[in-house]
Length: 241
Image 1: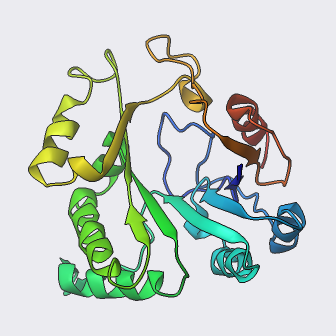
Image 2: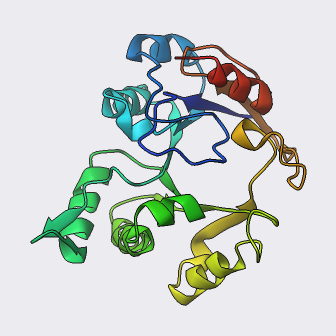
Image 3: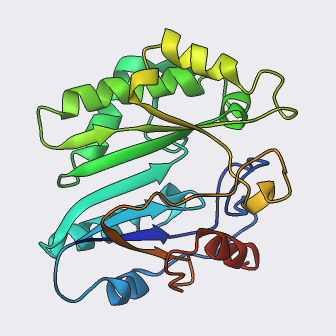
């Protein structure tokens, strides 16, 4: 059976999405140490890790964490969940440089072994915060198209939609925009769920864990293992600095 560890390696974030599922924002400052990460990983047998947040790319030891896990020789897959705002985009004369961004991002991910999965977030808030967010998503798609010739790199956009009354059309506009840009087929599109800052939104469904043959653990930024209780980990992160 596959063992998978979902590490929320920080509750800090450079964005403040109003429906954030883990109460993350720029005022938070808890980071999982590399030493604690090493302690939590199993001492024998294979495993997978998913690094989340908050925004994991804010973590000063992110690359060390990934390299350590892969260096064990027992890590079958690394998945990075990110809002994608901190990738090494390029700008020329203050304008978004697509070709330069593709090169920079490709070079960044070539530092890691495969299998490697990137799960960038797309939602209305990130688009409102950066009008280039979907253009940058297209550049990420182009990067991973090129990376396929270098190893087992894969890409899935995590797209969260709002339901009425938060969004007049249930964010159907976003789904259409993804389709127009050729991003829909590589997107996991779902509605926000009722936990975190959205825990009082009655129109949303509570999170549901799809049963599968995976033994998994949810780890908080303080190193606490919440087992499979997604809501409990979220509420635990709410109380952290």
